[in-house]
Image (cartoon, rainbow, N blue to C red):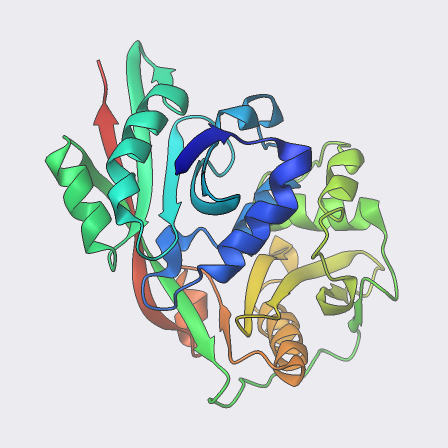
Amino acid sequence: MITRRRYKLLADFKKVSQFLVDIYNVGTLNSYLLQQFFEYAHTHPYFNYQSAHRFGIWEEKGEIIGLACYEMDLGDAFLVVKPGYNKLLFEMLEYVEKELSTIKDGKIILNVWITDKEKVKRDLLQNNGYKKEYKEIVTIFSYEKDFVEFDLPSDYSLFTLEEENDIKKIHDCLWKGFDHGPNPDDDYEGRLLMQSGPNFRKDLTTIIKAPDGEYACYAGMWFDTQNKYAYLEPLATVPEHRGKGLATIALTEGMKKTKALGAEYCFGGAPDFYKNIGFETVAYRERWQKILN
């Protein structure tokens, strides 16, 4: 018998994480709802904890066979199922339209994320009034290829978070590196929160320090031990230190370490930077939207 219940964040996180690892499929990427993507969101200060109980879990004989959730907040949805359970997708879509939609400018809206490799989900969305509004590439770097090598400028230094972990400097680096402006706020608690995930790896996170002692580049790296891939999140370089190869150096350092651990490839991002250092497009993430009223 298949049953549905609500997500209990503290009780279910580990079980759902293992479900996402177990159903990972390199062919479809499971709507790009990777375990690392899921965990990173849960430790992000912008994650809407108050509404996480709206996630839906489908089970059979105590085993999770389906999950409906958002990444950060209401208005977005992911539908993932264990192989052989596509029959649940219509019920799951009805569920997220009720539980995960949001109101914007007086309209009830829902965005559902899939990849272009998921024909069943695409057909489901098309047949139920959704329209594709956006797409972006998914890239990987195969470890069968040679890494791009740059020399670290002589007055910069490279280390991991195990060696030095200055939260204020990390916050300043990521704030400026993601172009939020020259004057960071003081949300250091949020940065500490982002290091609290069970699979966060200080030993795989690479920092490059500038001559003035501030952090110039940050590259976080995750490793899926079961599926043998690495996942980059986040990567940022402070504007005044760009153009020196720092992001490539930091990213490559993390990829080399995960290769030594048994990873076969690394997920990257969409900007041209990734293509320029050897990442290849393997799929497209697609956002399908419906106005429900």
